Image 1 (spheres, one colour):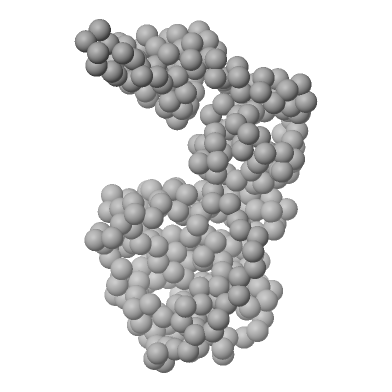
Image 2 (cartoon, rainbow, N blue to C red; image 1 turned 45 degrees about the horizontal axis):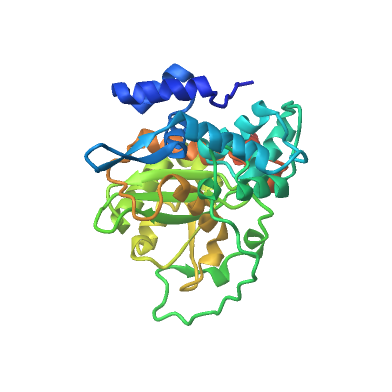
Length: 347
């Protein structure tokens, strides 16, 4: 198991000296054996405004201030703090939140499923409470995914201003809505900063929540069809129609070429069936919407995607598909998708 560490006072003295000598944060992290984010958080913790002899001020780092705040966090919650002195456990939890961008429930579920052993354990509510109270040294609520609101939403059906480009979701078989069978997908686009062109095309398999992500040069119907053609070539004309039996999309202009989406690029027949949601009804693609929130943990709204590479996209896709999910007893979508795909191939 990977080991995680908290900074000691001697580490803080080294950081002070290195900062004065102009050592980069990345090099500091490497020399201390910690993640670079730990150095950023540490410098923020020990920051203070220093008054110079000429009455100007500048921001500096104090190891004494940083150590005092660290010790205060340890003492503030009293002797009843369940996590106690299990620094290995605390550092592991902090790393998973701040670096791997996991939610508390996913972390605890994965620990249990994998049988990882620590001196102590905490519950999900306690985990959130400790973050709220500032118990952890390197994470705050700002490091968490958006907290879910428990209020029930009522959706109002909106009358379409124009007919969909293809078949309405009203004609989609009921079994697809029930998520009882494999091979039915939702498709959407995740755009970058306004004024930039590159866009993610995302496909989510409804049964396993498996995600396919591709970076497109722009947000157009032609690019969507071209990208779907590439995915068909990857899986082949024999497997693609079985794996992508249906795809549900919204009424955006990028999905307006229904014939192009359905028509195989390798044969004369159709490769899939496309259904169109009602207008302003994103809940009809609920899997897409939830997965898009996971993408936004790495690429928040307002961030340009123009420098995103296929390698970056592959890394993001892998992170989502290997994320432990409570609905699957903290197995990942990749685990389920592989099993379903093997069954499909062998059938």
